[in-house]
Length: 202
Image 1 (cartoon, rainbow, N blue to C red):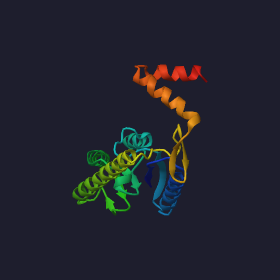
Image 2: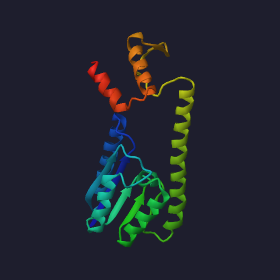
Image 3: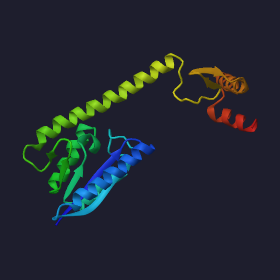
Image 4: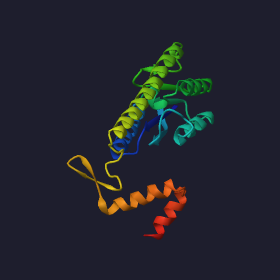
């Protein structure tokens, strides 16, 4: 019997992503149980973690340790971008696993890291995944900067303002507190001192 694991990841912990994660896990249970010579090792799942670096993903790292301890023979993953969006990490971990005799199968790319030709294709796909992640991040930052420049706050609810028909109107009841915060900062008070002062004022 081949001990087969699966790795799932969603980048946020919102409800819709949580549902997606549960569907991924259930799908892998079905896939593994449909093979007579496979047995489920474990399904590893990281929630609300970025794929750009593996060091912050506890379940991913636990999976690698389990593979080193002989608990896993094969790993299923939805795509290279779900496994890692950093080219160096992708190659480092797939090579490390391959040296242990553990293969990784990426569903979307139809790529098995134990195959002879996998290395070149893995490098290309991993590089594209990393660039895509970087591009998305830069676009989000650019969009946020543009919104700030237009006077649109990052959050729909911003202290000191209220929203009316899509426009932000100064909330006079809260405005005095906002002015106090700005004046305190301008006069050299630290963030901790301002917080303490606001707490004292209720």
